[in-house]
Length: 348
Image (cartoon, rainbow, N blue to C red):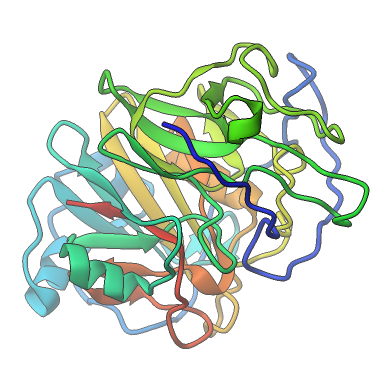
């Protein structure tokens, strides 16, 4: 899986400023750990189905205050496969008014699809029309093209951004970024993934730890430590990694992501609960949604961990965040209309 081009484009679609975060280090020096709190709160928001139904599919999710809306949504918008259930959040998450949905799918039955390509930008609704996937959320970062990894059927469609810079004159960072993958052996993997340009060898590597920013340093097979050739069958890039091995991780600085981690924003994320063997797509409203501010990355990581997602990755948020149920918006874009994005994650 090689790529012969280099992406000299800014790393995120939103013009957001980098904020400084205070955190404690423990364990590996290359991984920083959030000193984060936990859980839950609510608002009034976009129109929603009324009656919670079918609380038996995932009782531990219902115990956290999420209500199963699958039947009510299906009555409005049409049926979806029974191995996918959709839940609305409690009124509050992490002590903040919240309006969020999760799509929860049996990993043994669902197909995770990554929609998109290396060049074109399309709205999630257009991606839905092309795929007819029952659940679609926006995916990775973009500018004029996709800036985040897309792997489909074992083929590298688009790499994570290969280089970024704060000044585009003297400083250049070649940084692996957070990626959620289903590997060729059928296992779920959250890691930091980088594709070298052809000049450097053209290989794609996955790393168990992030790489500290170092001007001009290109990731190699053994740097950062533990690198392996990437063997994804399906993969979507974004960042930062939120949880890995059941631990909340802070790698937004090492991934050189200007996404205002401490700001309350609409957020989109993908996670895996190994105990229940299920995939989770998460999206929350914010910004211009009445009474709802959105969540921080800290909040998003805690929500996913509470849902049992020991492995999870943040996707693009802000005005890009949207969730579709059979093509209908159940999390609406905060800007009033969908953005054209580089990729989408979908359940089929």
